[in-house]
Length: 155
Image 1 (cartoon, rainbow, N blue to C red):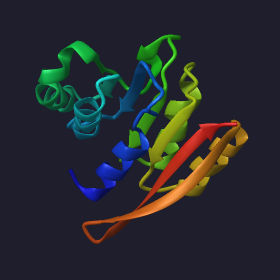
Image 2 (image 1 turned 60 degrees about the vertical axis):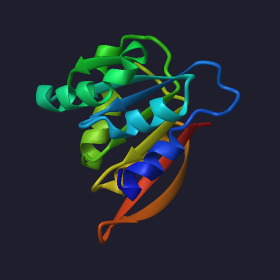
Image 3 (image 1 turned 90 degrees about the vertical axis):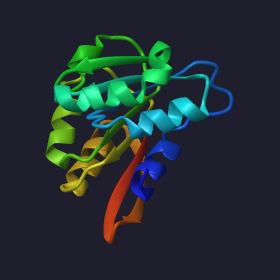
Image 4 (image 1 turned 120 degrees about the vertical axis):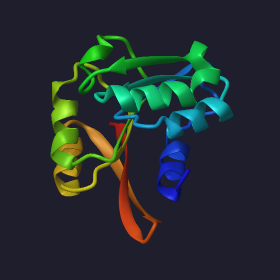
């Protein structure tokens, strides 16, 4: 797993006090972040979402060992989640405007979101501020490219 995904996984980790922890990876692609979380935290459960069936199949294959702690959805965004509560949301590797669209349409509110948009970062930060989230911004150098990662918590 590259340094960007490693950083996202660490930020998404449950606290030691969490008895049951559910992380949602929207646009999970290969499922590597969820694999790391499920491997390292027995109290972690995951929801893998991707609009690409082939990508979701890659994640399903990688996460086979943890199939009792993962659910999979081939969907575009978070509308497949219903109104259940989740601990953390990960959205990484898409543009900021797409990230905002996904968050705006969703009826689910997350206490913590780890977002890593590839562009329009200032728009995402403004959306977070307008929607009562505090945000800590970090940058990670990975394969000679700098990535911004936003660690947002509800106020």
